[in-house]
Amino acid sequence: MTKILLLALLSGYRPGIGLILGIPTGINLNFESKPNSINSTLSWGIPDLFYFSTSYHENFRIETEEDVPGILRVYVGGGVLFKVTERDVRFGLRIPVGIKFLFEKSPIDVFAEMAPGIHLVPETSPLLEGGVGVRFYFDRLRLERE
Image (cartoon, rainbow, N blue to C red; front, side, top):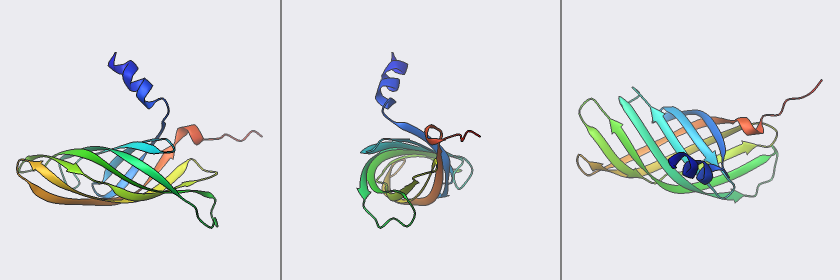
């Protein structure tokens, strides 16, 4: 039942996978639709022993003078994070704000984000994360016939 519910929920989303460099540094998954996206990051060892976050983003398209054809969007969202450091285990909330550009004739997007937030466990403390990254969307891959 859980698998069916998850598939129904994500059926309108296009999956993308890539890398994020910053805090955190790791693998980034993005399930994209026009008005919103669901984003997750998984990392290990840099700077935490284990890190996982997931968040919901609301996307806003920006009209541009297009020297490079594509779609420019800004986003804002909310999510949770879980990380294991050498000293403790932390859980918190984050508010990602970012910008992303999806190239028109390529299955790639690039993004940059900042995510202020708050650790709730084991103690309340502020946090600031951010990074830049690139993702690949398999559904946008077009094979040219010879």
